[in-house]
Amino acid sequence: VIYSNCDDPYESNFFRYFVLNFKRLGLKQLITTSYKPSPIANTQLGLFGNDETVAKTKGRPKITANKFIINEVGDMDGDGAFNLNDIAKQLKANKNNEWSPLDGDGDFRSQECVDLLKQSDIVVTNPPFSLYREYLKQIFDHNKKFVIIANKNTITYKEVFPLIKANKLWAGTMSFSKDILFIAPKDMDLSDKPKTAVRVVDGVTYLRSPSIWVTNLDHGRRHQKLTLMTMADNLKFNKKMKGKTVYDHYDNYDAIEIPFTSAIPSDYDGVMGVPISFIDKYNPEQFEIIELGNSRENFTPNKNYINPKKHTKDGKIVNGGAINCVLAIETEIKPDGIVYYTSDNSKYLIPPYARIMKPLPRPYGRGFSFSNAEQRLP
Image 1 (cartoon, rainbow, N blue to C red):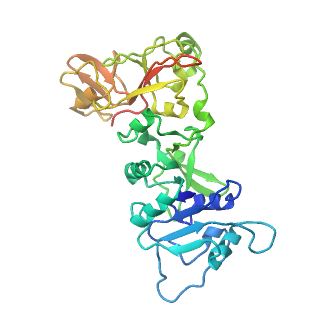
Image 2: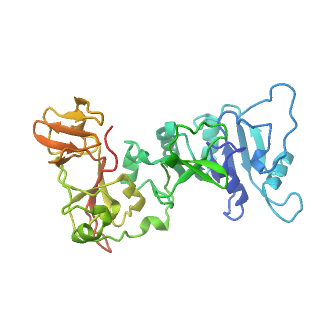
């Protein structure tokens, strides 16, 4: 039983996908609910990929949150093919399927939606990012399997990172390097969007999003061993390490900085820092995650900076106490174009946004310990 509890059945591509592949996937039931009204609900069958419309009613149309429950799919019009038109006919005839308004507004936290959640086996949706923590907690509270879309930075949330560390949540099969595209509303003003944030495919305008798939369903890609070069070979051949003669070492933690996942050395058995994008390559049989180096809640630095100052990109100097809560790389050269820190007992400090892992022997090879820097402190 699949439940998409943040998806307007009139507009959701999750609904389209699962209903068209209902038999191929061996589904028993598909449940889809929407939050509040759809702008086309009860006025248009845009969901079904045709130009049919429901006859307009006099006055303002009744708008509600909706619930679709699909138990059976098949060829309704006798044309020998199954498509969304058949589902439309089945829903209208109410044959073994249900199409009805919800009592409330469709909030995933409402009791009627929680009751539907309890009936399901797997949740698949794109939850509201602003409620992601609460949404994820609800899924785990009800012990459900899930495949959902999330912002990449949710990896660092204090509510999420422990789940990753405990191997209760991991990356989906889609690489972090691939775009997740969302169709832009036709009336949306895109003039303030950078060109890199917009893509046009076959005449349709899409917005790129720093989003990823996360799940607790196991898959083969999660168990693929990451091929690594030695430290010497990385410094010599890895183009992303060009200009480096040694790996940077954190000034306030006994670990080396790994700026890119491809630069993880195979012959280093100490603690290392890797980017949050490393989670895309994380194999629990090859690596062990120790902690997240972005606050004292997650790790303990071995050095305290005295009278730290933060230097912003526009030249302002403000209190820099935050540097005592994150990993820091010390450099002799004044950084240019980025935020950096200084203190009475250090030179220039650059704070990577870090994740820490520890080396651990594994059945088929070395394990490693990591921490990482992908984003700068604001």
